[in-house]
Image 1 (cartoon, rainbow, N blue to C red):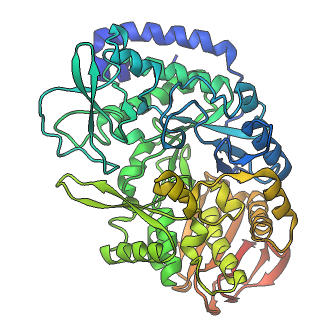
Image 2: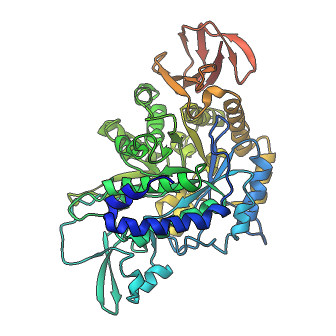
Image 3: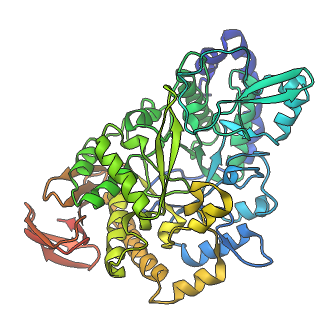
Length: 560
């Protein structure tokens, strides 16, 4: 058995560790017979759709059943996996204020509807930093139930909390009345999202039990939501603390013992250096880390027509081992984070991104700083709109070419691609939704009607058909070349300021693909050191010593 004692000793002391180990072993004995072993290997064929459980809807049908029907029809052999965003009962934040981690929201369906989708690799959310104020756990805390008294973080007096890093512009503490008096409870994200107290080992074991349940129900990937804020120590920034890393190491070791096929993915929307710290030493923390700097840097490249900053950043991407890789994405259910780009882009560049986002019909969300000020935190905008103004007069063909060139860059980088539903199926922004909910992020969270999307995908002139057809071609080309293996290598090349050029090499060194992406609106020509290659899109050999790329053209070339 993998030795979990060092982690538990570091967190809770040696005496507690002995007692906790016995409880952990009982959990393992309970779950081992119920967890089916599976192949956990990654390959160039892996890409993951990011979607809500009710993303596509049909009358008189549970949304998870509709989602399965839609994915079976359109995504079989297109993507390998599906990340179903939180499908548990919830009270706010579009699912991220979980009432019961062990149940399916009855409005979406039931567990059988989730497990029936295992023809795809499934990603579940481990929303373990916090829980809904309406949850049974917190309601029992409010009743002074002794079992749940220490499940949450109560702050007494008036300690200095100015150092605490805040992701939202909301109060850090929320007062609640209990039979024993008013208690100020830690709420990092909102008054409805009550932070869990991992200083109580019962909380850690409860969470381990929940994650093992997810594995039993078919999770191949577990996304650790907002994990950087997990452990709190007054007098510190309460982010990236050693105890947080230790908990991730404990969960990784526990899963390796019972379900080694499962991958942990950390979601830490923070500057790049802090973000990649969640790989640990390459063997002991997350197998995948969200590549949060990629969306704003790609957007900057296309807005400026200059790929050099993006190229310089990508050139420095390194992985600590061949057991880790990046989870690459451009869009998600959240906005485009700005913090990951700080220190890479200048303040003027970030201001320009913000201004362009507003010009393109987007919104900006803010966070609290330690000095009491607020600063822009993320850009809330659909990625197609972020690249192409909804009110612009550009030809649609040009907008599609630009959008797909951006997606191709994401697909070309080392890692596993995560593709948001609204990108793969080319939705536009939904400002009307923001008016309905009052939340900026709603602009990129519109739900779709199954029949309407079906009809649009059958219409060769529709935006959805044109983008999805070409996106599918990109994914097919990627899956057919082992050079795109998530554990392969990459080399960024300087061929032209307007070109993002990357050479991908398979882990065995036998397959090489040169990926060229013109991020500018003009035709360009340049020389290369190569003579000939096989064009993965045109399926033919071509001469490439002298290359010409049209505006926003993409070429993926298999080298001899």
